[in-house]
Amino acid sequence: AKMAAPSDTHNQVVDLINAASLATDKETKLSLLKQIQELIVNFEPALLDNFFEELLLGFQNDANADVRRFIAGFLEEACKKELTLLSRALTTILAMLHDGTIAVVKRVIQAATGLYRQTLGCLGRQQRIPGPKAVWESALAVREAIYKLLESDNDGVRVLVAKFLEMLVLAHSLRSRTSETPPGAVDISLDRIQLTHPFLKISELQEDGERFFAELVGLCGAPTTTAGLLTTILASLVTIARMRPTFMARVAAVLASIQSSPPPHLSPSQLESLRRTLRPQLVLLAKHEASAKHHEGLVPVCEWAGVDPSEISALDRRLRVPGHPRPAAAAAAAA
Image (cartoon, rainbow, N blue to C red):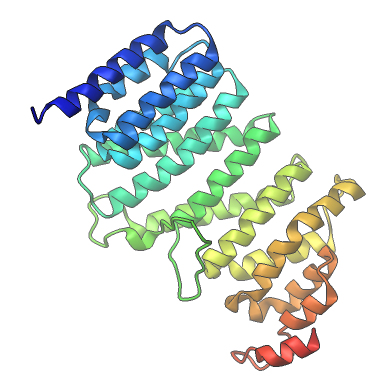
């Protein structure tokens, strides 16, 4: 009698998969697939192994783009519950990056961002994953394929590749005492990797992180970088500086150079929009403990972006003794 519950769910999933295969309209098919995901990812993850292949075979190449997008998201969710599926998920992601529909490629890059971070975190702690070396090779192949999409002529794709690079810089660097973690963020860093790891070498991974950072910085000045892409990259650089203050000096320098010589191919209204978007992020950056010694360059950037003067005087640490932030009362009085 005890075995009845699992087989009930099992049979329910079989029926739902059959119904989804026969469904002709997109809404019905997606609704059935979401029910399947709910059952095998959230309700009874023990069933994931049974149905994973079946779902991929049945729907990975579905004629409908929204169904293919769903499968990309399903891969990421499934691996959160079952690490042994990482290998298969990564090879599927690699194939799906070549989809002919931009909306699918974008969803696949987003899923890959989570999967790569998870792979590095799990392998670093040497959690039991079958064939760990092969899983890492797959993750590297995905990384390479996404990196090549920086050449895409679709700006939405390039924006998501920039976000992928941001994740790579964070995952391929070490935290420090003043590292912030934004609320709700899972911070995977090289601190998770065991020093004696058989094939993940911290120094090599760190060099990769430096290379990805240089790539983001290089894009800032490229004439092919649109206003939207530049806005994303600068926001990513601010996030990197807050979470990895070792990059603070270089990020402050990039922001100062954008302020002193804005990209000539941007229109006045695009620059205004860029400044508006950066404003709240610059305030967070200037409040970061590790930014104090870079305020010579950062405060003028805040002024350029249109941060309120009273807010600037409250956070400006240019004239203070290093290491002695202004007392809150004085700051409040100045504001």
